[in-house]
Image (cartoon, rainbow, N blue to C red; front, side, top):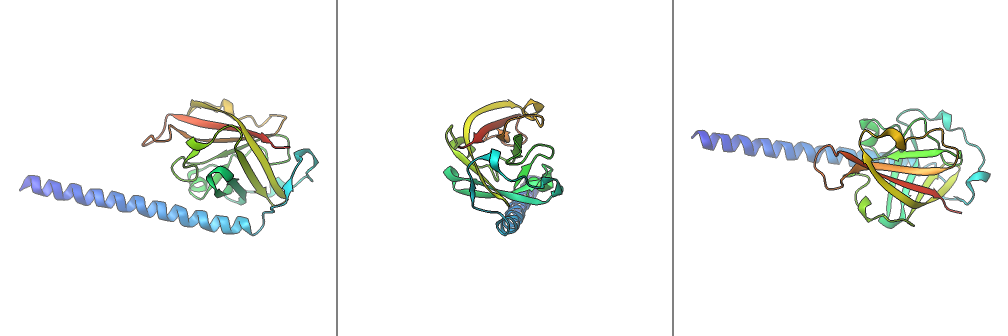
Length: 194
């Protein structure tokens, strides 16, 4: 009798855990869709071919949690909203822009982060030469992946807000198939496409 009761308790706990996980995934997808609609209402598809010639834009107007643009990854055919900030709430709604790093056209490091099991699924398929399109209000900026590396989760050397040449840096947890808090970060470096 005790074994049967324990079995029933474990089954109920398992169903509850799966239900909660499913609800979290549904809620995250719904928020991501809302942010995409918001971003699509103001981003421009006009390609900016030279980041040096872009008209300066007031990026300082963005506040934590604001929708700032769209990240399009052609190889994966994925469009993702970019949210200002990298808190859990921000990352649950899209790709987070690390506050304090640059934006397209500022000739600085642009750092974007996201979860490997939501927005950055299938990142293991990306290779040097693949493109990333960052769609902002003043235009679309295209970057080409030229390098990647794997660093420890606590390695903050990949963040360089004082950098003086433009680079799009994208980070996510690694290994991609790891369950739980991953010990490393997968970091992609993409440079403006001329």
